[in-house]
Image (cartoon, rainbow, N blue to C red; front, side, top):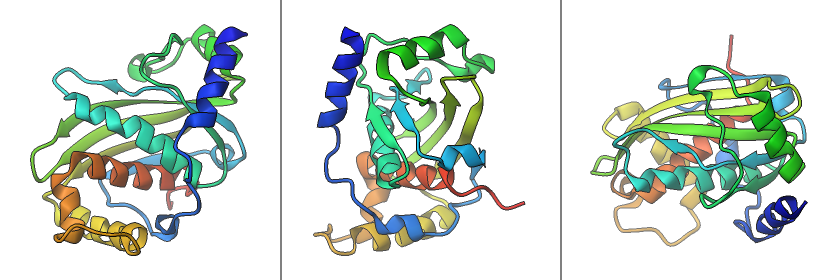
Amino acid sequence: MNARRAVLALGALLLAGCSWLPWRSLGEPPPSVTWHADPAAGEPLRVVVLPFALAEGVGKGAAELSPAFAASLRALGRHEVIRVPPSTALPVPDLGQGSVPIDVLLAVRDATGCDAVVIGRVEHFDSFPPVSLGAALHLVSCHDGAVLWSAQAQLEGRREDVQADIRAWWSASEGERGAPINGWRSVLSTPRDFCRYAADRLAWTVVHPPKP
């Protein structure tokens, strides 16, 4: 019970001000983002976002993707979202073996009262311009272990289609804010902003089933 209270308290402190964001109206992300989404993924759920695992050799800057994704998922307005910090004592499941032990899911559910958990792994992250990121994320039911949503992204900042998508995202989400002189190109040289971009585009896929 104490663990649950601690997590709930954290939820009240996380990433305030995540109201509707224009990036939600963008179209599909670049082809290097692939995903599967069960209709249940778009239903109102209490979702916990656990710290994403980092592959060997991936710098700590990639850890920014986890809180960024929690903010992006919350901004969709479908789910109640709690982000668990890296210092959590909760078990952090890994889908590297193809499934998550049900006892791990039940432990997370009992501690947080969640319906589902987001787990992820950053496989590649190059913080030197142009920034690039490779990651796999999954939304897993804490009731039966079903994977409700899964996405893989290979976002290379040097690719023209990724740059075009960043321009559209920047125009939608940053147009009314103070912007660096180099505008959308700053995303290609700023790892934190690149993680925000990646998180927004990955979150978009949660509620948009891929076209047949």
